[in-house]
Length: 340
Image (spheres, rainbow, N blue to C red):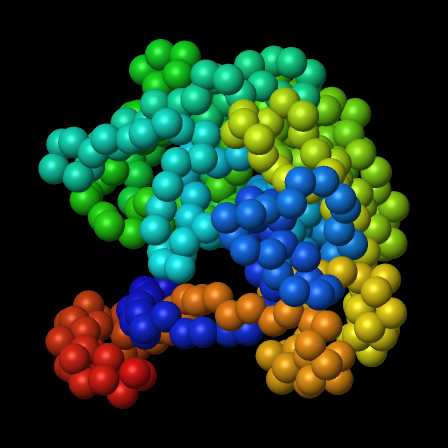
């Protein structure tokens, strides 16, 4: 199937407070007034809602927001979107210290931090990074969202990803593509412990993560009750000094929106997020009005992709000349003006 992607300008959606990552970094609370970003308060715990239980606890086989909410706080990635600035399209290092681009935009070299360790004390090295990315690049593995970047890379056996030394990783593309880093920075492209995966095969169950202390993100998973809640606590060995500010987060799985709203009003839930609840933007604003200023609703930019999909196995789109004609017939300038 051939996809013709169109990118409208970034839209805006309303959320209660912020995305989860911003909470980790800034230590903002949902009830009451938000603290200034430059004056975070250290300590405390937050009760946050989750609209559903996690399907799986790692990126392979994961496609739902409920899963990424669960494992995002537990594992690192090479690069990530910077949620501490207004322009959230900016990409910054997470597990790397820097990267350089060479070979006409087709080679990316990442230098890794040297102070990161898994929960069992094993250092994180290029072996973990190459092993994890190679899993996502494996054509036998369903692409999902964790493997979208492999549309641009060479196969693993052709140097798509390789270890230069213990703290240097190189990735090679089949052609220069600006979207490569954007897909690599998605929250689904997590780096997982090679030594644990070689024993367990996967980390799809929370029990495996707790057993092997397989966390290296800002938080570690300490308790999980299926269908009820899961609890994380601050990772005291987190490689980003001084982070996170919170002592922990308890994610309560609340499917019913009526129960969610009543729980929030009763202060049983401190934070809700439009991506991780079943509430609409209007319901957030209605709730804000009902609570008389006791609820802080923040707006953050969000991106949307829209596209035309052509079934290349059937006429007329099985003919590449027809597909090319459609491609040439689109007035992109007019389309951009319309969606603005």
